[in-house]
Amino acid sequence: MTTAEMPDETTVTPGGRPAEAVETIQREMTAFARRARASAGRMHPELSLVSYTLLGHLEERDGCRATDLAAHYALDKSTVSRQVSALERAELVERRVDPDDHRVQVLHLTEAGRHILAQVTESRRTAFRERLAGWPEEDLVRFAAYLERYNAWQEAAPGEDQH
Amino acid sequence: MTTAEMPDETTVTPGGRPAEAVETIQREMTAFARRARASAGRMHPELSLVSYTLLGHLEERDGCRATDLAAHYALDKSTVSRQVSALERAELVERRVDPDDHRVQVLHLTEAGRHILAQVTESRRTAFRERLAGWPEEDLVRFAAYLERYNAWQEAAPGEDQH
DNA sequence: AAGAAAGAGTTGTATAAGCCAACTATCCGC
DNA sequence: GCGGATAGTTGGCTTATACAACTCTTTCTT
Image (cartoon, rainbow over all chains, first blue to last red; front, side, top):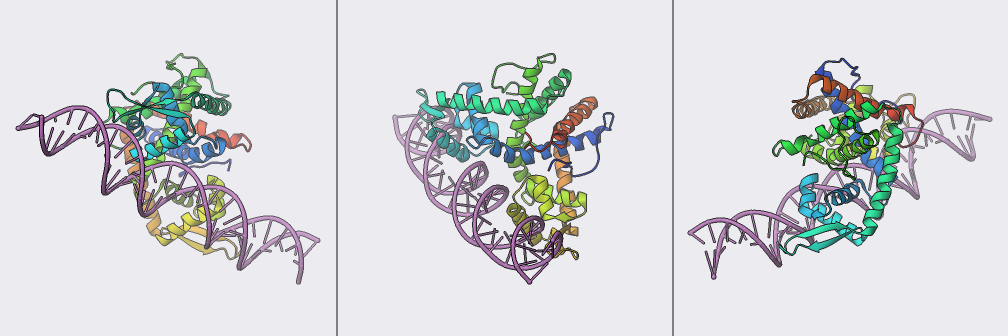
């Protein structure tokens, strides 16, 4: 399964028309998405891709509400509720009832959660670094900026389901 | 929250160190992957992301075996078998027993399959175009090239499960 | 201030997709 | 023609997700 994997044959060479670039971006992002979950599961059986990103978000924000997670990741609140329950059962996160609003539980990483997150991040980082090893620095920086810009789209535009 | 979302606080500005860029790429690709499947399902209830890519592959290759699909997408053959069954039930693909090897069923798109594939491709294309609407042409082309390069990695490197 | 509306979270139920293992049927090598 | 490999199917299980109905708390309206 190491070979090509494109819905259509066009390859955008630098200088291709923008229409082609849009097609390529669509195709490549889709190709990536299709695989990511499967390989992530195989890499880190202890932490699904979703759990990993939820923990990551918690670390980044230093705690947040389940509702925030749901909104941010376009997941149903019930889904988040169950994911969080699992993470709590595994003692990777803890809930603290917000003293100002008793409806709210603020979620925080536990020490164990922080630890596992760091481990998984490290091993993912290794894989990414390997993958990006041959890239010139300038390209890395630009690629990173493009991805951020792409992913930020939804947050600017109102409502409509992204991608 | 269009900006940072990083395990550590660094924001890659053009000129940032490559280590930071690698983190960002990892994070953003992951974020994308997490979302894609869910939103794809909501966009095209009639055709899951997997089904879509299977149909796409069939069109691209002008027919192939279930085993090829499984190998290509790193899916279990049972998963492919059931997906194909569903697609056949929906009359989007048909099976033709290979006259030279009666174990083999060569899968082909039906007219309906071709038609739906075209429709979904078109609507996905529209969404992508919208999303990328404000981008300067040059950036689109470069982004596309980066994605191709990123996804092509596996093809050069031997074996190991990518990403 | 009382009742209505909105918000946060949980639980019940259903579906989809995936894996593994066991199975059938065919083919290939000798 | 027998034994091993290959193609595909099926049964059983798990996980991730959505939607809907529900509880509890807060906020808004009059």
